[in-house]
Length: 146
Image (cartoon, rainbow, N blue to C red; front, side, top):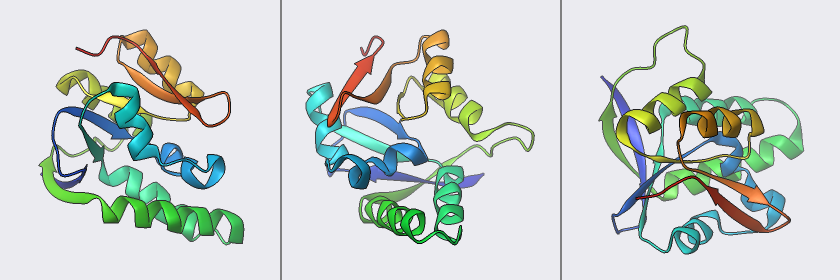
């Protein structure tokens, strides 16, 4: 078992897995992603981060490019300020992070928040609800949320 971090907004209802590029949106679009997702879903939300997403952010911090490193540090700070630890199954070695996220969302009925169009298409093909940036500072939801 791996330790999984859940971002919690002190309330529980919908569960949303955050992709690393979605965590970078606050600095790129100047929006509060947590508040905007809750407004979009009209519900209380539990924000979920898998360890592999945190690893991707840590790699960006070490990338050496100051602008990317600064954004990644901010994303990591956002994640750490809103997270509690939980347990989850380990990602198989040959499975990419995007596939792992899609599989978890499908298995547990979670929504995924991403700015990655390739992942968005993969989720859409599987019928998994996805939140993504659209037209400036807006977020959109595609798919059925029960």
